Length: 638
Image (cartoon, rainbow, N blue to C red):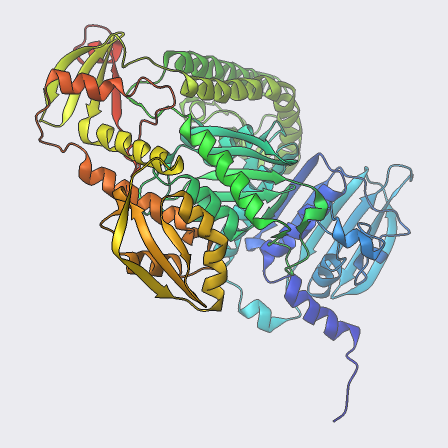
């Protein structure tokens, strides 16, 4: 057998296959380089789904003329210098593979300048080979253009998806990168159309721009710290859940990653708050010491390993549980007056600013067809006023076409300058808005004090009047929540009576299952299940809590051990589900006639401000109608 040493043009293309699978990988690597370079403004432009062209420009530190060629050599990096650095990585990039891999399968132009050099440098690379290098005039920062991705690897090009699919993948990635770096101003264009523009004013603003106002108004702030580990971000109320996990974004020390354990910790924390088959929307950043997390476990750095995974699971679970348990889940049919006033104030500021921009532009010689910028303007300023404004353009069409490009560039520079000057005002209002929403959600409405019982609707809904509001309460959901909380509190405090089994339940396990159960024995015992080892790879259950007296123990433990590598299969999840079903069976039903005394007894148990006004399956308990809203129905007020 003859051993061949592969030439660089071949092994670089092989290496590129691990790092650059599709255009989204290129965008990710280039944007992360900009972030590591200290950029505060980053522009991303893609054409043809990123296959035809990708441009990433930033105002970062730049690359010196002496180093610019080295940047495209395999395993060349400014991020680490010695082996010990691998055990405490703080930068997003560190392997030195990305630029070499990208340049091997594309045509690259890079323009860059460092602050202490008088001129910038232009370097052109074609398929990994340097074709040109010269001095140019350029501002501090870097602009990298990737043309014709995979032009010299037709097999890989053939297996890419359609440009629109690749575009959507990049747009989804950009949403996550923007949320992971909310302190940076981003502008993201697709085929010269602006998709996202942010001003670096925080995560709340970023989520507003990406998800829209409805999501924004349903966000709850997460801010939890324990043992030098901080969990910060936003999670949507369980009542604003989604049909899949695509709305879940996780950052670890600012790095966009996926981690099954974290997803499970969040989902488990919502047991008893979210409907089955639904998933929460969230953007969470976990910050922890760099030496306690390994980011060097995947070619694209999308996965991480924690030194203490069980501890991380517990901290995230606590952070989410404490957040959602304090939220207000009263379904309000009218926008809160404080929120409405703030909303109007923001919209008036936006409208006036927009009109002033139009007026200023009309007074210059740079007037262009503004309707071509509708999408751009609507993302930046206001969705409502673009379509209502009538812009009368009387200039000659041929003259406009001749000057269109120059005008567009001047217009963009002008309008971005004006918007950036005023963006802090609107951003502060948005931040204030979300903070007010969160404060409102923490208020104790005292609706269960000094109320007047009106009656029962359809033998199912309790009607009460309080503070000029009508409240409709689902009697079954209300009682179900109370029983669920009671059962959970009794089990957690080991105060629920146990039932001895006439015949102990014995089951066998394999080695892996035995390890798993031994790790969770204390948890099961704390919930009132008397379980112990019974010989080698065997366990015995002697008693169970009364509330679980009718469960099928064989099915229960089969479910727990079904996938012991999955944190979703923690015993606590199954216990909560069983308790929820027990509470549902024991609660009053729709159609049951309740007396006023029974209603008062039911409602009196909601006086505690810690009560959660959702049933254990995620359905709302109370709907609120404001007197003003009702009077509008009858045209008493307009």
